[in-house]
Length: 290
Image (cartoon, rainbow, N blue to C red; front, side):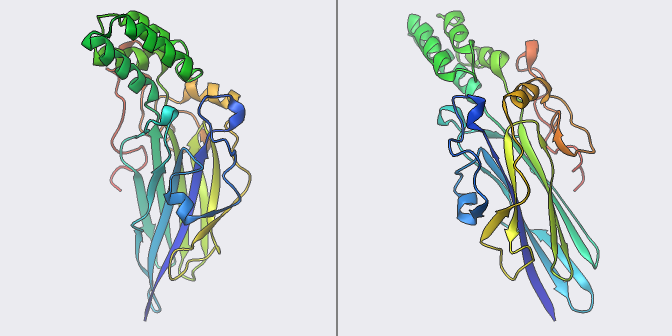
């Protein structure tokens, strides 16, 4: 006789209001108990890494099958100026099993494209003859973007008078204020007796994140409907924001743990090459062949 069991875990990545950024999660920490409907609704966070495991157990042979649930994945809230963020590469997934336990890992990441989209909009406006209006639009957006785009908006508007179209505006914005990816990596272990162990393995240096386990902390005949916070939230404060801007680019270590410099896709800072740098790997480091 066989049994199918489900187990869940999740992390919420959010921007602490004390960073002073123009776009923050005003409620601060998402809360100690979260319903699954809040995970799927895209609220209270920049993005959520939600891992749902499905395990089939045979009374005689232990675990005979292990797979990710259909709702596993990344759920995103809007970025600055309500613009959508962009997923980075493919979701990293791996599952291994013995008769005694199944081990799941899931890594997701995204990146705000607000500065590039702002630049594209200004460039397009100028390209179709907005002229001096492009300067005003650039200046206005620069003020709105504040800490995100800094002087980029003014620079875009000024440089772009009658000379920069869509791609030029995007490149100037990306050069001035491109941001590295934000990402989290979860692990969930389900044992043949139905017990569960989960962990937030690694994550980007910014923003803040809060880790959750299914409530109750056992595999069930259907996914649990609530998640309970485990441990203290990681505080992505202003110091860590600066650190992430400086060290969030490039390849992360293959053996990641906790707050980690770089990123698992090896996205490089566009820098003076603007859009010519390798911006993503399809599969994150550590998940090849999975």
